[in-house]
Image (cartoon, rainbow over all chains, first blue to last red; front, side, top):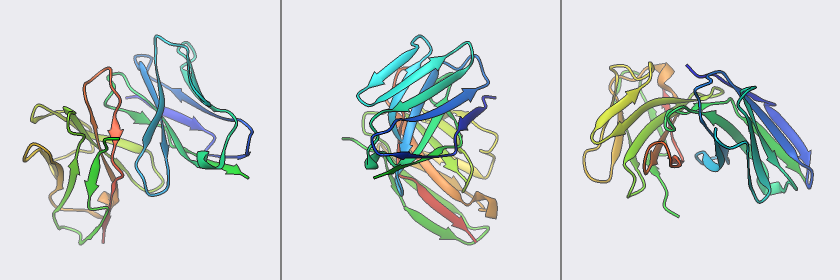
Length: 111
Length: 114
């Protein structure tokens, strides 16, 4: 089955700096790569996703890049703000609903 | 914004007892899922449900687990005889369609088996 590795497990950044989280996946058939943000006491919330026919996608301060050849994808958050502090999960899937998640990255934005 | 709602938010149960976790998916969604996250581990897929039947299940989803859509709004996960290792956060999720749509997660039900 699919195996997703996520790094780093924790990330502390100064407010205004950028944060980058990287994930690798094992199954070359995977074609859907969402990123979820989980705040304390809440469920995962989708923040951005990318499909394998696209190399990069951007939504305001958040961007995701995908390298299918290398089987890795990354989340970039620019101009970080305190409200960006949360746990971020990457995931990969072949058929969209059976998501294989990474272990999560705890992001702390220092004011 | 529409959301997936789950009850209870936290349940403590004795080992061997039956537990039912409830979910109300987003109203126009057709695909329903359960995932779980054991403390300190990854979020894991359990089961998907469409058109009143299971469409796929993982190895974790053994005979102790069952799902049901008893009416037009609720989607339940039943654990027949709980074990200590069933302690986890259980997330319900739903999506409008397969292959093109976003999966929306509920806030989770934290199950503690003692």
